[in-house]
Image (cartoon, rainbow, N blue to C red; front, side, top):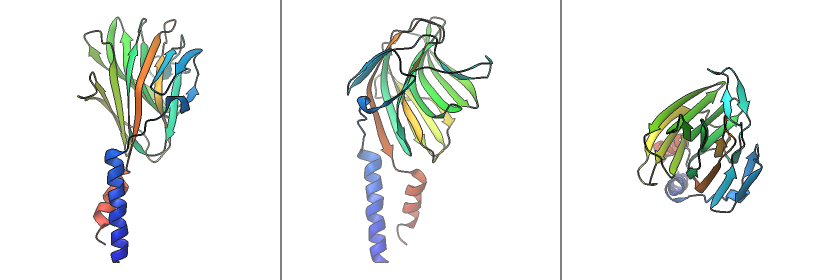
Length: 223
């Protein structure tokens, strides 16, 4: 019993260290395209792309059509994590957008970032489960860049924005099936226009120890 207790304590300490210190410097040149755009370049620090004209992600609701053809550059994760990226873009036309996306399949995904609507910048989130919804937070001034962060915990994803990578404000909490692999990465869409340039920098993923397992270990550490 003492040996089992010791093993559990070591395992718990390892999980705590993983949760607090390990950050994955996900290499952008090791990621995968879905709907690869014609023009793009990548190194280990930044992805530059020209967003494909007349492309978007949306399913059915309000507009009555489904599109799934915008560029998405991703890696895959099976558990809980925190992901963030710095985004700057030359938005031009209504609905030009760039941000993070978490995607299980064509009927289940969430995208969050900046969207240009009626000449104004908006912090935008689209949550899709069979059908899409859309929420925005207006930004009164033109912004040179924004940081978007997502934290996947259990069956929810929290999205945050920041203008300095220090102070983060929540923009949405949305359901996403837990215990299921998810594609996570960056996307851009240009439903109405002829394309635009976007730059993604400092993309990183920090794995988080599974919350249910961590709680179980804490409750059972002394047994």
